[in-house]
Length: 262
Image (tube, rainbow, N blue to C red; front, top):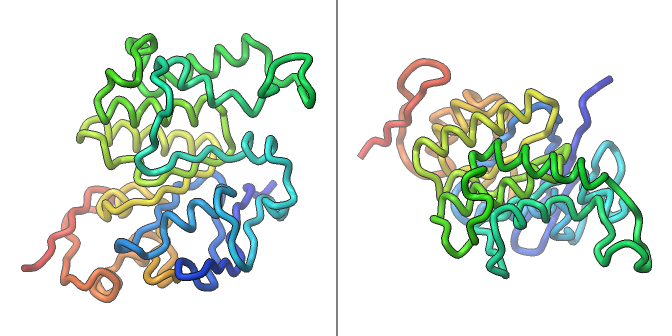
């Protein structure tokens, strides 16, 4: 059986996207890169069903997101926004447990529209696994207001992982993390991809995209301008044309650094 695909088909959104088409494959890590204002976050939000395009569609396994029930879409796609805010000062464990909402009735058993989903045991196991994956077991009872920026970022990703989605869409997931936790998070996302999950990330960190992504999509001014293996999509000529800087890749494959010429 071929891997499931998540596809943007001729997406346009006034002033933000212009005829964007790109297909993403489960089991791969794809990085979306580009300068500020290129349309990266807008594309990711459309892929998640958060934004509706003016034209075109997003299809999951050939089915348009607009034709899917909201609950089914939420079970399939986990979305981590950039700089996610938490409205209530809940504990880390409660925050992670919100990832299980697509499996439950929002108003409890007996309420209109209630449909049973996973068992309480399955919910607890999924939350525990997500906290362990993000090394948050020791912080499970701590309130969000007492977390550092990096701890909060990891807790928000734990919420996504607790939902056991088939797709993880993350907008700048490395931004608030120190070097060690960024490396750990990237390793975990790559592990999710090896397990068959589709991982799509917006990244400004070009070396991270070069060294860890299976594929890179480069955007500029609302359009896709390069799409392919990292060494092709992020070749020096593309960087010069899109970012307007002269740069050179150095180092071995998988350990490359980008040197920007002054």
